[in-house]
Every structure is written in structure tokens, then in C-alpha cells.
Length: 312
Image (cartoon, rainbow, N blue to C red; front, side):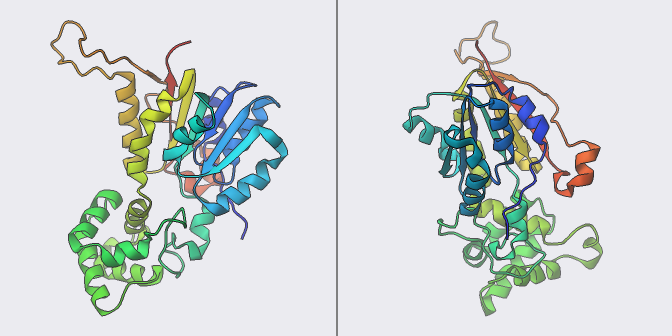
């Protein structure tokens, strides 16, 4: 199966980076290379792009797609939380722009054996990096009922989280939950029939387990300050999120970096000494237009936020 991922908000994201020939850019979620390809085109033969992804299939697909740009491209297999450290170790002190597309790729969702989808029966996996030991199967079969409940409630925002966690624990007493199909049946039995009419009943729980399996929110929260600090003056960080949990983290981090002052509001002058790192370019997130929504249903929940590093 060919690695496929239609880059969401492609034009808007690359436009936001203000790509300039000779610049240095980083794509922290390389995927199939869609955003990177457009950045490299705009570099017009002069500049460098560092592409990072933890998925072996993405690395292979993007390497082939971007090979036409020769030594302008450096591709690294790693989690984007390690990207700044990796680039510094390669002698890169700062970059002109960074893009993060936090969506799960169409390839990961559609390739059943990756275990991301609730639409086909396959082994429970959900690892974006198959080198890590913890998979969805281990989470479902080893976490306590209270841990599962909090995970499904907080990461999936699922109103029936308590009942789903209870049913998972009851089911695994007889035998381990090993496939996506088995988990779907457990979830379905945990939700009243009248509440199953809006979308697939397993969608929120699968999201929660995937986030936990890949530590997605922790990785995002731990990376943003370092990425902003890694930008050159005037450099930009563009992030596409796909659910409210991610968007909240990005919005909070951007706000904190724009106004880091911790002095009480009644202080006449700032004494904490914390200096603004830059500014949010768009207070309201950019969302797909009608044409993109028509062509790519998976873009529906996408939101783009942009931060610009201060200085000249």
C-alpha cells in the first residue's frame, strides 16, 4: 500500500512560513512530505530543509518524494520532541521556520494492520514508531480501570468513559483484548443504542488510546517552548491541530511566549524580567475553506495557528 497523506491547509501553512530562498526550515512531522515539498519548491534551489518523522513508512515515502531536491534535504527518523537537540548536534543553531502537522496520516488510518482504525479488524497497535515497546494492546490489557477511565475521559472527551473502562476490564478477565474489532464490540456494548447515532461509537476511545500510546499531548507540550526559542528573529512556527486538546496546548503556549510576565496585575512595572519571545500572527485559527472540505473530509477539524519570533 502506497503511503498517502493529503496535506491539510497546505497553501495556508506554507504561506505562513514566508519561505525565502537560502532559508533553513524544519518539518517536524514529515509524513508523506507534502508540506516539505512545497517549502523546497519555494526555496528555489537555495536553502535547507530538515524533515523529521518517527514512522518508518513515512521516512521511506518522503525520502523518495523529496529525492529530486538532492542535498537540500536531510531526513531524520525521530520524534519531533527531539528535533531541536538533533539539529543542534548537527551544527544548526536556528531555523527560519518550523511546521508541525499533528494529524494521523491517511496511510496510518487506512492500513488496517497499523491498528489505528476502528473500521477494520486488525491487531491492536497504534504505535507511530514501531520501535517503542508500548502498544495499544498493552494499554488496554494492563492499565487499571481507573487509569482507563481517566484516559478515555480526558483524551477522548467521551461521556461514557466510566462504562467503557468497566467493560474493557470485565472482557479482559476472560481473555486479552487483542484486536481492534474486539475493542469496538466492547465499546459498542458500553454505549446506549440511542447514543450511537452520531458517528462511530469507538471514535473517541480510539483517539484516547492512540494519544496515550504515543504520548502525543506530553510530546507537544514539552516541545513548543524549545521550538519557538530555536527560531531565528522573524522566523515562524506553524502548527496544524485536529482536536481541541492539541489546539488548547498550542494556544496556551503561544500566549505564554507572547506575554510571559508573571508579575501580579497591580504591579506598576514588570519586575520578573521575562521577555516576550514574539507574537501570535492569528488570534483566531485558520480553518479549511469550503473547497478543501469538499475534497478532503478529514480536514474538517483542522486548525492552523502561527507564531512569529521577535527581533530583526
